[in-house]
Figure 1 (cartoon, helix red, strand yellow):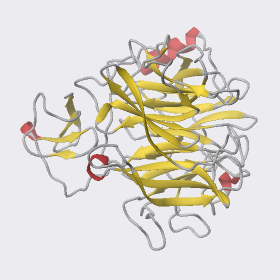
Figure 2 (cartoon, one colour; figure 1 turned 180 degrees about the vertical axis):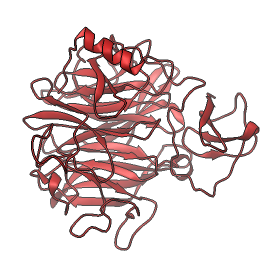
Figure 3 (spheres, rainbow, N blue to C red; figure 1 turned 45 degrees about the vertical axis):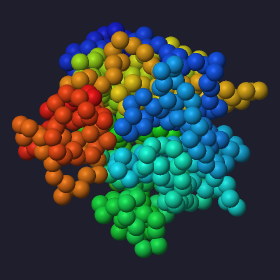
Length: 449
C-alpha cells in the first residue's frame, strides 16, 4: 500500500510545486497516561468529546466504551457503557461512537457495531447521555440495521458538514456493485427526521433516491472494507481508506454518486474504466498490508503538517503523511512520518484541541492488552489561538437561527452552536469560539477559553 521511500528529487519537486515545506518526519508515540495501570482490550476507535477537550472516548471491539479523562493526577479510565457486539470472528465487533452535531443541546450520540441475533447484522443505535454530563447513557432506538451475509462488516460513521450521518459499510461477497443492498457502500441518512416505515429519512439530494432497484440510502458505491473515513475540517472533503484483497490498498476521495470499483476492479482500473472513479492512492499489498484511514491536520496553519493527511497501516505498524495535489487526483508528496508503532495500528483519532492519537491493536495471543498513544512532534501542535478554522464547519444549523457579535461577526462554538448575547472577548467561554464574518461566512479568528 505505502511506498515508504521517494527520491529526493521527487520530494523537492513536490515541495516546490506545492509551495509548501516538505512533510516532517520523526513523529514519536507518546505514552500520555500510566500504562501500568490503564490498558484497553483491542481498541477500535479513539475520538473527542464535544465541549471537553480533556476527554477521549475509547471503543473496544467487544463492545465496551470508556472515557479517558484528564485529572489532576493524570488520566483516568472510566467505564461509560457497553453494546452487545458479536465478536465471533475478527471481522465482528464495536467500531465507532459519533456525537450529534448538537450534542451539547440534545445529548444524543450514535454507536456502530456488528451484532448477531438470529442473523448477523450491522447496527447503528441512538443513545442519550445525561443532560448534566456523560453519565448514565441510555439507548433510545435502533436507527438502522441490516443483515450481513459476508465477512467485511467493518465500517465507520461520521456526521458531514451538511448535518447528515454518513456510514461506510464493508462488502459481502463483492457486493460493492450490487445497488440493491447497502454492503460495500457509503450510505447517508438523516437521523433527525423519519420517512414512513423508517427510523430515519432519506436526504432529498441522495444520488440514488429515485433510482429503481437501488437503495436510496447509498451515497457512493464500490468499496471492499472501508475501515476508517473522515471529513477534512476545512473544506469538507471525505477521505476514506479501503482495505484491499490481493492487489492493492486504496485511499479514496469520496464524492456523491461515484463508483470506486470494488467488486469489479481493485486499485487502478485497467479496462472499462469510464464508470469507475480512480483512488487517490493505490499501492500494492507488497508495500503495505491494511490501510487505516486518518485525518487531515488542520490545527495550526503555521505548522508544516497543515493540510497533510495522516493515516496508518495495520501491518507495517507505521503512520504516513500525504498531501493532495492541486487537482485532488493523487498525492504530490507522501512518506512515513514515524517508525513502527509498538503494536498494530487500528485507528487514528483526535481530541478537542486537535492532538492526534493512535490506537494499538493486538489480534491474538494470551492477552489482547493494548494501548493508546499520542503522536508527538514539534509541528503537531494543537489548536492555535487565532487562525483558519480547525474543528467546525457549517454543521446542521437551522437557517432561521440568528446571532451576532461586535464588528459584524457571527459567533459559533466548537460544537457548531450559534452563540447569542454578549460576546466574551477573552474568558468565560465553555469552549473555543469561532468568529465568522456575517456577510461571507468566512472564518475571521477563533479564541480559546
